[in-house]
Length: 344
Image (cartoon, rainbow, N blue to C red; front, side, top):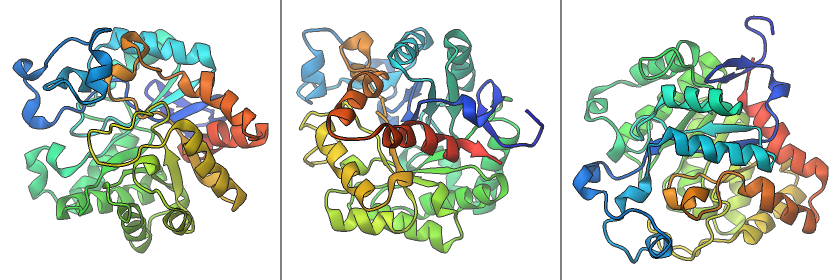
């Protein structure tokens, strides 16, 4: 591949876009999503076991912070191998600043499995960020993200291949807005796509999309994550799609009515596919992504969960049963990720 040509930047170096294959665009292989105030050994809580994992998932076990810590490369390696066996090829890890990103760990997983692993950069929501970020400028954040894509992340030579997930709350804070504007500036300089973690109010994805558009972001390279826990009505969904951004349903496999972060009616996978079917009928096929956003141990096969292979093993057959064509499935799992991850 010619230097400087179109490429997908993985943690092991650039690859040709056509090598990417079926791709999960929003996952966490190694991360710590425990609230910063609970990141102590004393606060870990119980080990996950067959007799408590359902109760932990349903929120009836207090102090189960261990569930929100993915810190075992050997476990992640085994889980990625399962994804490959199910038909996946590549995975994007969006464990950015505040979520304990581990570039060296991702390199080890990629080498051990042969999977293509793409790493994100930037910063998660305000409360997870380093307190030093309070005094940083937009330009400083932008420079950091450009360096992550062009030179390496978090003091290593492992380059990011996407910007994000850039964290927002509802309402979002001035600091989060500075980080987001830094991401837009970094996108202009690098060409990398931006992944957004929106706040949980149903109007916040639109607010962020409008902000990015006004600031000059490339909307066809902006991904709004977590549609399935945020936007529940057709009017908002269509208005958001009309901005040109990419919409990501990334909680596939998470089907419990209990959701610890908000009082919502969490859709199941069939309802997710129904919403996507409606957008495709409206001409938005190129704006659809799906993934799992695994960041809990209980969602891994090791601890009784569905694992990173769930979409390939279970959702794709469901898509076919519900009338999705091979062309549509190819677009969602291969073509759209390849376009978004290709840096010209």
